[in-house]
Image 1 (cartoon, helix red, strand yellow):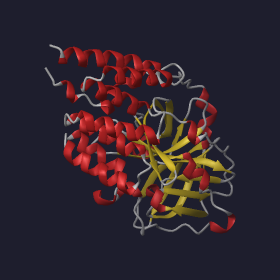
Image 2 (cartoon, helix red, strand yellow; image 1 turned 90 degrees about the vertical axis):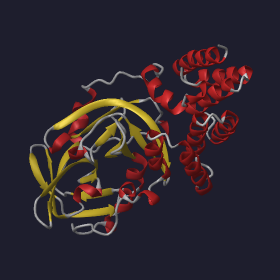
Image 3 (cartoon, helix red, strand yellow; image 1 turned 45 degrees about the vertical axis):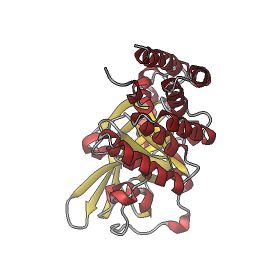
Length: 349
């Protein structure tokens, strides 16, 4: 039998997304996205060196489409396909570091997407991905938010909503059809971990009239997620270490992470998970407690804290953590109750 110290709150949280409460587990209706789909276009970039790159884009203003810079990085000319026609792009504005490129197509009259409220997004929430899967027809896929990663004033959205390279630059939408993110990348070493740029970045970077430039290849800057490991955002360095069970290295990574950004609660939550795997339960209590000081409503940290308290035999503190979790997420608290009972039972054998 596995040691009770080997439970990871992060692993259990992902499994528990199947049991999210009704407020989050909204049933998405395909009909909601019929009108939304007209905002999503196909982006065709003729590369300077020859050939065609194909991706997706979302209409975000009159004659303005946003896509990923990696879709049009080598483009000498760009067109968008929407409403059964091709439309010439005459200008662009690039934030290559964040992989956000805005395109101006003066004749395009597609309906702009409605921006969602960035701060309302929650882990476990149902979402829809809409883009040109494989670069051909539009594809609509449903899934849930797995995690929200703080980066540069926004929260990069991790979901289990699959998309392919042709859908890069497409839209991630909430149940009402509001745009909440831009489909962008997945981790090669991860199974079912897909990432979208936050709509806050899109909204805050809409270009002014004097910021447009002519279409030209973008060779200078790689986006944040395509850089070498040492310069990747910390949340992207976690998954490979976690998948390989390199817990000590993961603790060391989170120590550097929390030093670089002491207000990022995720660093402490990840540290708590790793410490649990190392059977350092008292230290895990400290890590989760610090995570909750920074993010008092983080369900995964309350879950991990309750497990860590149970593992060291402080059942009163574990029940208090479980009670707080129940206020935030009743379904997850019920699952926690069963897990704590199993953990305590195994230690008493």
